[in-house]
Image 1: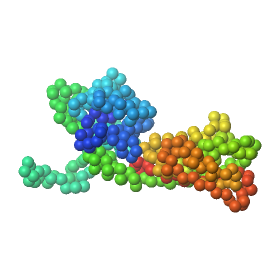
Image 2 (image 1 turned 180 degrees about the vertical axis):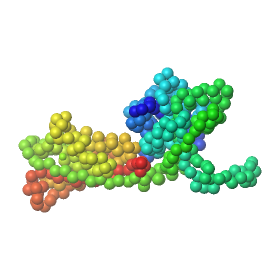
Image 3 (image 1 turned 30 degrees about the vertical axis):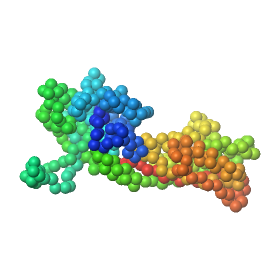
Image 4 (image 1 turned 135 degrees about the horizontal axis):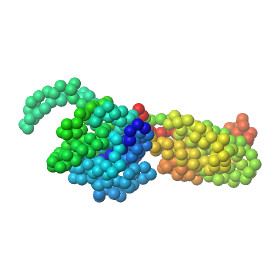
Length: 390
Ligand code: MG
């Protein structure tokens, strides 16, 4: 990495417009607090070294919960205005100054990793770069009585978003000067930089990078997500019977006159489910992530494979909508274990039980399953990802 990059995620606002029990940045969208999407974007970005959250002192517990498991600097407390909060983040970074700082609003949870990369690339050529999108509506200026005073040339207008990118010393200096002059009204860092005489370039933003402000914004975001990137994956697996006194099926130990042969615990059901989820993500398969040649996975319990695939979904900000499994064998009888297996699969994948389907069938004594030589499993996973990944 040529330059060191830090990201400040600003989340100190009270978000009174959304209402509800807590500030908007902690409200859930697509299954997680909005702020978690924003924090994860930077925490997982390969070009971002450190992430500095700025929070309201009242939100410490909410933040701790929302940030669980993410690699971040300890949060600092913001001030009365957004400007003061950004400054608090900058001052916290100042002892170990990065070369570049990105400033992002926690309430913009849908920014993509590609946008972060563009921000870093754009600021390499100058002191400041901000994402902007063209204006497609006609924009008019009005006076206090609502009379139009001017129709603006929309070709010259851009709607400005975050993350905004700056040379760190430039932004720190501009903030310190504004504070020492008692200026507090800047609504974004670009406006403050412009005041300080810094040249600000605009790079291509993203239409989907909306700022969640009103309850309607949340409702619209949620409904957009529902259809945004719905994916289906399938998985298939077979294991042969061999010596033993039990089989592992769907994470449940079932006493049986024979065992299943395999490198891991040979849980054919969990293997098919794992591949179905990986298939929905177009993310290789179980054999690539857990090579049979690697002794680590000898006799490994297969719940870790399924948990791994489910975590891959979560790391992309998505969720598993549904898992469906069909087990094909003459024996053991699956019916008596069906509910235990559903419950265990739901637990491993982090789903409610009513989102796990499980059926069993024989193959009418035909083929290898019919001859009792092994067990086959077929699985389907329906996965929802938060945004078409750029
Ligand atoms: Mg297998």
